[in-house]
Image (cartoon, rainbow over all chains, first blue to last red):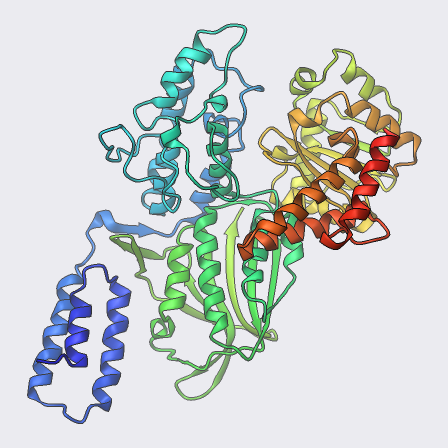
Length: 393
Length: 206
């Protein structure tokens, strides 16, 4: 028997690797197909009901453990501890300015700080990264004692201060604790061959623990023109678009989970590419008190999709939801544009998508925003479609 | 005051500088102001609050980067850009040297690489040459030669590299080196012979 498109959709929905939002997208497309289909009959109705049930079964209500809260102020405050005079600072700074008697005295001080546990409630990727780099992620090891999985998003790095098997600590006991004159410092630890990534990570080979630390530092802070370089890299892949204002980012340093923000930038640029006629992208930022407003604007681009003022969530497509999920608890996210409401009225406004009090849920690796956005009218002139990220410094 | 030197950890300075008397010598330059611990911390706070008024005669600001937050760095950047003041940021947390001379001269450097035997000669040289000296003198004994050799290496890498993103990185670096070297020709694969001549001249000069 030959397969029809509905068989294909059925197979697609049965595929376990499909995420919740992908499944929802397939269902939306299915609805469009049905509208076109003249052979809509009882049999097809039954099949659709079956497919919808597939979604409902999978769409479990997340348990309490999987609810996360949007708390960018806490995350920012925590990350700044890496520059304050805390034990955390000495996980990323060379030890020539601070002396610990033994490696254990350092680790004890480090383990005394439990604030990182709270990040679990705000951003899982960042929590997993900090836990891996500093504490004990309890990841499964293979028969040779090598973790099966590495850092979130940097799977090739499989080592931290205490994991796996106190590898670095054992070395420090030998070369830092015991030696008096020719003491070796933790950053000098040469990674065993099997822990050295085969390819460069962020453009550099990782062979010592100092290299590992350097990678970690770029994961928790935009520093030494890292943000500028990353935007410039993306610019080189979008040669037909004009990136305006990126040079000012060259000296912008701030703490955040950089991978989360850069993932959001990638989705923003994908969204921008959908409007091929407006090629100018304006990058800008402004510091107001302790807040950093970072805007990416596609000039002269305005949404064609209507905004339903009585159901603002409907405006959030896959792209916007994905951006909001990537920067959950890293910064507030909003969009500014001239919207068209259900009565064809033009509204100059800012749609706040994540803000204080927003909740989300985590299912597998996917974060879904649970709260409803809100719209605020603006009287100022609007130049296009702006993606606004508000960081708390 | 021509040089403002903000170091809030004098112990670190003493540890890094090659000679015990170096810190005293730095303090002794009349054109240089290095506030003591509490005053230094107050200045950092004022900078971070965006409230510090810099001396209009300043030519160079040297600051411990970890004591500056995002806002403080922005406050200094604005002043340096508007007044063409050179800026050196040092910190134990900086893992690679960043140098930029586009809007104003800016050097980001690790504390250990900053506090070397080149620091005092650099200060002296700057003062004696009306602050025309490049900040790169802190980093390299012969910065021009170092950049020329780096340019040659990048040109060779570009010949082999096929990855677009990596090529782009190399090209941007080469462009930056051109803006630093300021030769009468653009350094690229077509002018490598001229570059080699410049390198030879420089080596013979040294």
